[in-house]
Length: 409
Image 1 (cartoon, rainbow, N blue to C red):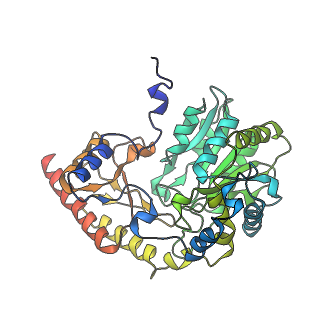
Image 2: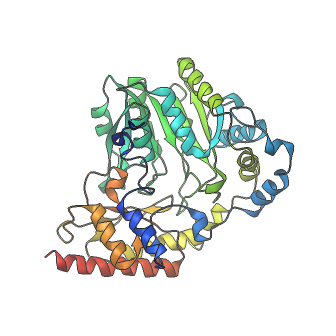
Image 3: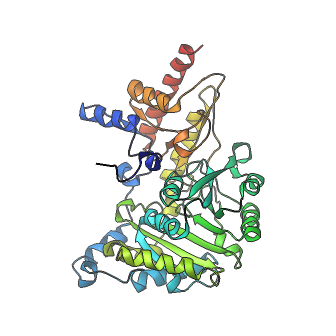
């Protein structure tokens, strides 16, 4: 029997659900080993729970006829209206309820947005490093991912000159992940405006992943990219997974804004795909209005005295105390993307490096090439574990790196 999908198309579908490192971790857990997981932003696994009012609201609504039934293909009116109000707070002009699509997490909607857009050979500009779903879904939709570089020396800002160089006649869209996963970068208006100008000149759609827009440290403020222009087409993605610690609720949304007049065919495609999957899960939809309108407890967590604020500072301090390890301190999100000096750590295969770290120290990380970074000199960690576990984990990384350097010199 012929394979339904060629394996090459699935090569980068998900760094965290395939590959020898994850298989080794599962095997070790089956053998009774405790693994310290610094590999994935599944906040519930670290004891960070959704706000109680969201949980109670879902419990109250679950027995209702509404929760048990299909909804409009774009979603229930009340949560979509709440998202319209949120876009107004973010100063995104001209959004109506019809411009809002609810999905089973932002991930489903990212796939929908690219499936509706791309024909074979169309190109999408995606940051490197990236959140690998963007690269994978571009390929699965028949498109070609083209990675533009983000500059570590400039706090991981997108290299706009590199974006300009990589636009071709086949380019259809630019992806912007802000706040950024995996680097924790937060982009200022000046950078966003420069990218918008490239999109304007070449009539490109801007796909903006803003899932961490409230997970901000040191008093930093997030600017929604779609608030900066109304003559470019924006598709903005967000949801409850991170800011509201509700990954499993699968409650995300997509907002189409800006220059919609010349995008009728694309919007018709989005509507068709939304109808084909019937609707997003209804209980998850019922959490959105309460989440957006309620007390924003994420603000407490990101304070210097809050759990995420303290853990970010601790992880950064411990990592950068390791000889040969540097790391841009994240301004947002839940991740760090440290660099290993190749002169001290001459890594040829960073997946093998992650495998050896797991085998020797029982710490699970993700290699930098898993985020489409070109060199085997970075890795990503989450700083979600509590302070004691973080201290233990990074201590183990330091010990492993010490022995690694000795072995390879």
